[in-house]
Amino acid sequence: MIKVENVIKNYGSVEALKGVSFEVEKGQLYGLIGPDGSGKTSLFRILTSLLIPTGGKASVKGFDTVKDYKSIRKIVGYMPEHFSLYMDLTVEENLQFFATVFNTTVEENYHLIEDIYKMLEPFKDRRAGALSGGMKQKLALSCALIHKPDVLLLDEPTTGVDPVSRKEFWDMLRKLKDTGLTTLVSTPFMDDAELCDEVALIQNGNILTIDTPANVAAKYPHKLWKVETENNYKTLKALDNFEEKISAFSFGHSVHLATNDNVPEKAIREHLLKSNIKVDKIEPIKASIEDVFMELMR
Amino acid sequence: MDNKVIVAKDLTKKFGNFTAVDHITFDVKQGEIFGFLGANGAGKTTAIKMLTGILSSTSGIAKVAGYDINKERNELKKNIGYMSQKFSLYEDLTLKENIRFYGGIYGLTKKQIVTKTGELIERLRLSHIENTLISEIPLGWKQKIAFSVAILHHPKIVFLDEPTSGVDPITRRQFWNLIYEAAEDGITVFVTTHYMDEAEYCDRISMMVQGKMKAIGSLHELLEKYNAKDMDEVFLKLAR
Image (cartoon, rainbow over all chains, first blue to last red; front, side):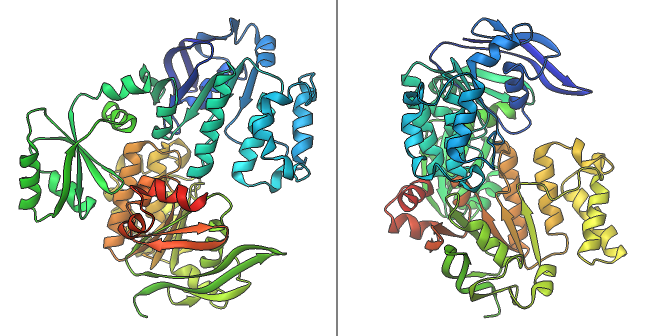
């Protein structure tokens, strides 16, 4: 449904995309996972025909993003990172506006947005500018869906959104997937990746890896330990001179320590005790997408 | 009383008949890393605006760095630092020019500015880009620079409003190392975040729900009280 082949985008001397390739199949919920500045937005703008790539090519549903730009614009629903809504129109007016622009009516495709829009209906006469962040995001998604697109392109829909609204948003995306919609979504939150069918990790204009979330996590090459102590900061300092350490990073109230396969738990425990650190728990764990991302970045 | 950097009692802000912040009472100790969580629209930004002397309270009182937030705003502003996810740095000034500009704003002497500039650039290892425009510096570095500039005048407390939004996972952790260093140096850190792993790095965590401070305590206290395995679970339980 989406095909990106060796796409390059330069802005003057800045290389935003350095030859990116991936494919999204029909019906997939596909995640583009990476921090700000990794090239995600440039890629979305190329796919929506708003930007011409410096090199390579891309297509959506067989339409070339440069040659067939008019066709592309009819079949994609696009939610840019910064809200695309008209702040001085009401909730209802925004929705009607987007339906009209695409030559359709709200009634015709209401079934597509019913679940999401129901939550907004009590506020349908409120100006979009006066909605909370979570509400704006639901309205923007409704507006991107109202013309029944074949492909939904969502650029960082959950940035700046609190954990509860973020969870609700992903529940909506899973439901939309069940209707057969193809979705490409970008996010800087590594834990969002686990909710996608397939993910591409992106950093500095390069794809680091592409696979299912479970396979990406399984690619982690070292033995990984979760170390819980009284204090992460002291623990990380103490691990600086632990010879068996490959890497150590804070994860909430614990530290994830990577070592070679043959290192026993006892060695870690004794090293920390030597530095006068009280150890609560040390246990082997499976790597998360975030562990893999940091390993690939190193 | 001396080592309390924030003392808030029944702090309230109303906009018309909407109560954005509803009688919040809490205090923050010197050198503490204090997490201030809440859903979008729970009143966090309004509370921060009051605590930084930008917005006056409708009722209730608060002292920050020893100054009354309504009556001693000018003194208050000299003794705090502030950084948000939207950059506070000037994009068309160089790194060095930004430091000099903020040093001047914070009332440092020329000599102090020279010393502080050298220290900051050395600590962040940025001497190779000291004359580069901020607009040409990568995001992760900008965040670290913005934080260092926000504490240039060694304030009693620094307010960080979603400082790591969108930053890569390694830079996010390096940023937190800067926070720990500042706290060890005696600077109190008041921080909001949507990353729950970051909430767990705080000495104490508070949670706003519809204008009220619904929970406050150390991570272990909150996990026990809400019978949860991590902050993500606590957040979901409280906000829903």
